[in-house]
Image (cartoon, rainbow, N blue to C red; front, side, top):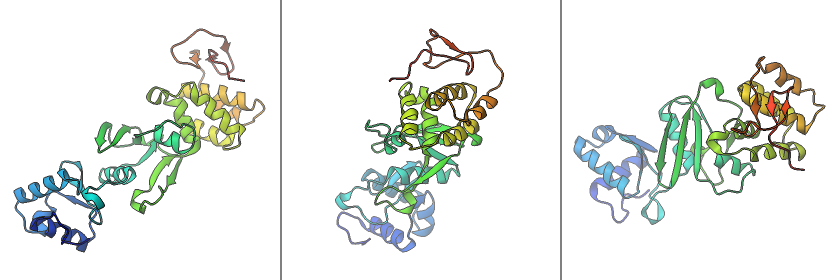
Amino acid sequence: MKATEPGLGPLEMRFFSWVQFKKCDEVKTGDLVRALKLSPKQEADLLYNLSRRGLLLKLWRGFYLVPDRLPTGGKWSPSPYLIINKYMGELEAKYQVSGPVVFNSYGYSTQLASQFVIYNNRVSKKVDIRQYKFVFVKVDEARLGATKEFQPYGESKDAVAIFSSQPRMLFDAVADYKRFGTLPEAYGWVLAAIKEKKISIKALVDVVCEFGNTTSKKRMGWLLEKADPKSKELSRIAKAIPKTNFLVPLLPENFDGPINKKWGVIENFKIPT
């Protein structure tokens, strides 16, 4: 990064020279007061102006991401995965990305996705940053797991994403259907993945038993039996379902259909042939 880039004032040039020397990728309120001997007002004005011009990115008040070099065209567009990693890192949160972007990445949805759903153990909120929409969903730490690192093409190691694994993603699509609007489509995804040998029934059963509640276990048990009625893995789900009389409709909010007593579901949905 050169401190002689056109369009930068003396204070801005001092800032970027310091960033380059220190190899900083983030700054917080107070850093420049100490490092550049600025007054709090000078620091606030500098960060505001650089953020407004797109030369750095404000994640929240007092916390900014900084590019390693001045961006071509004068505006920096950091990777959404860098934003997620820095956001979660600052909160010391465990997390994994799921939802539309992950469905698309694994090839189960062709819908253009710009929403990132981040399961984590710290915060629930919706945040729009530049062109991206982030939905942070706080869950119990025990519900986090079954992940896979994803390295976006051309991105730095700081932008590596932690995705739900493929089995976990398919489970998420069934279990968290209200958030994603993925039933009954997700049933087809699961069956196709098994038929095409993209994934094993055992891998799905592992995820269902570890992360499922009674409702999702009943639906997934029924579905996986459709995929392979002879699978010995299905008994693990059956044993994990507590004894209960309540029935779970395969398609929510529709209680019209035959009852499958084995799995405790209302079969108001037929697998397409």
